[in-house]
Image (cartoon, rainbow, N blue to C red):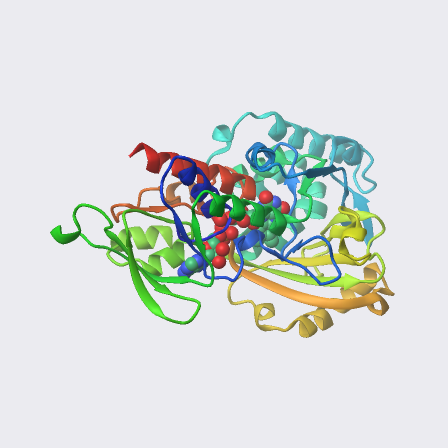
Length: 430
Ligand SMILES: Cc1cc2nc3c(=O)[nH]c(=O)nc-3n(C[C@H](O)[C@H](O)[C@H](O)COP(=O)(O)OP(=O)(O)OC[C@H]3O[C@@H](n4cnc5c(N)ncnc54)[C@H](O)[C@@H]3O)c2cc1C
């Protein structure tokens, strides 16, 4: 297994439960991938490097939590949009009705558009349509200008007009006003999953980077152990090991780079989905930043970030030594200058905008941490369904399962778990 994110760990668990032998290789020093977290010495709970929560209808992840006997908190935190210098609730039919900047017509059009998407059982009717033109036509010019255009712009930048309506459908369809969260934090939950894997005899090798994958097709290897992995171990040794099958849960462009023998047209196809980096600057504060709001979508396009998520307006600050935690989140193209800045440099850029929301926040800063992850968000355009890779790759016995493949859903740990279970089933059935 290549990669110890939710997909790799779940696939490992399910394979071990059917009696297979599994080794997991992970380049980082902890399991978890995009959902991984960290813990300050004075905290009882771990905290994700990028904001995370579950929806209450995320059945696969909630079932896994039940199986691992892991407690899950359910809360109804506040989700607002930042419009005209104010945080205004915007996450349910009643908040659309009371939205102060919409006329009655805007409210009806926005509400009915969202209701239509919510009630539509699947995305098939919407395939091939672009989201923003649909939103303009159905929800109207005011709703688009005030809310949706700025949010698409903040998330997808130059791709905003190309984003598929099916992506927007998935976001509306799945969203629940109440949210869930694994007690102890995502990293605590992931460690429990990793412990279960170890108990079943699975071997998780951390700080071990897979630098090459090849298929040994000569007769000498014909029977078993035909997939050769070149590994860079934690003590910086280069070794090779052979396996009878490999499941790759790394981003497609990395797979394309390290696998030898892939046909050119396959490489071109799996590398043609654009991905955005995610940047999260975390402020650890003495006092709350927002006035009770957990999630604040920024719709003022002059702001240099897309979202503020005050985690401790969702989970109790007492789990973090009474400190308050604010994520400043952005999705950025790989060449964006922010990706080269330090936490201090970014805070300088963000400061005038943060001060507009809370003018005294600076006195309250205890610490500041920066996390950047590449390949964090595939850009889902109307061509996307044609580009999605299959589990089976052109290399025999080498399988690919990553977040590009959860369409029509947007990437999420729930779908990583679902995909880990599907790929394990496929392997066992062969
Ligand atoms: C900003 C942000 C917010 C999110 N919010 C939520 C949320 O609220 N709720 C939710 O459910 N989901 C959320 N997600 C999505 C969720 O984190 C991902 O969908 C999920 O973690 C993907 O798991 P994965 O195992 O498929 O991939 P990954 O987590 O990317 O795992 C791949 C693993 O492979 C490892 N790897 C890479 N290259 C190599 C190599 N050469 N050798 C060995 N190992 C390697 C990586 O280190 C990583 O651990 C969010 C993601 C982001 C970026």
